[in-house]
Image (cartoon, rainbow, N blue to C red; front, side, top):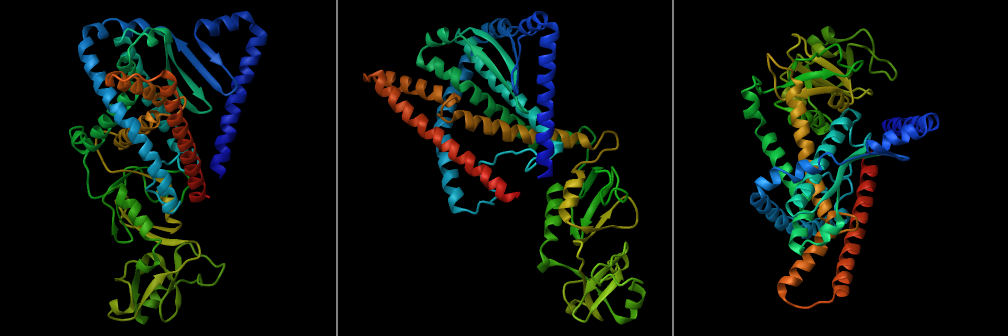
Length: 473
């Protein structure tokens, strides 16, 4: 909750500062300032910034479109057929998500529709990459519309970028009069172009993502049966125990092969049925005992932990106990008893790593390590270990965001691409059938579908936000 409040405060402060500067410059410079904004296509509103330009109009219309006109037409014809499939599929996906949300638990992580809420299920460190990817996906989406419109002879007034609150987006401003002069299938090509481009972008990013091990090998990166630490948050528990470049091999005897198994090993420690201990008999207990009685409530020791057995509880030197034979029950020990850590501060974790001969010990919530130690599956002698992570995160976000934009925009709901796709599709199908149907009947049928789809989106979005709030409360 504190992260959400911090984000709200920063966003509010940003927009307050932007509007304050805008008001001051308007008062001080007057017409000169307004003329500068108008000449450069800059518009400033309450929580919105917009930039509009005509510089790309001729670039898109000339050269490339004329040279590859037939190939571009084929490209967007494929996009039109894909858009039709995506339009109807999106309705079934939303209906399926709606039904599943009432059948399965609200905390089920397999839901198709999951809203991204900065500070809740999106860490602050990932906000910039997320917004950057959202902008790139939006630009590629709008470029599809612009290129398809240019191919069909529809002029463009301009294009631009805008930011609403913290979310960036792109847009193209097409000539609606020349758009009306196009036939139904030409308009279908134009309206489906954005969804089609997002799908292609998603597929391309997925191919790059899955081929990373092969590609990175030629750049000097290797993938071992371990993870490489890229950074550790300053002031956290293991800040002085593991360092950048350190390789982590195991967590409590659970082998760490990659970032996925790292997370699995950490979550495994929450399962008390799989809690492992260490064998100790009376002959060595005296050497393992600590001078403090950390088993008493309120008593802590920097190097000792309270261990429980079927016989008694002992405050023992944690590192030396963990060097003994591992066990799950007393029957696993040839002598003595199986002592398992029991600490009110959280869980005891032992990390075998490459920084030193000693293992790293951690007492606390395992999720703390998951969010404060940043890892990579790759290591290199010549390049930064963060590079594969940056590429991987960028590709994952492109796959998820471009896929989401394709599905979302294909929904035949009000103010989305799907609204225009549906109108053009109905006109095309009825025109091809040869039947005469009045425009009012077509319009009413289209309105009913769009209203149903809009309500369906609203219900799914509200339900998804409620699920996120319940999950992360």
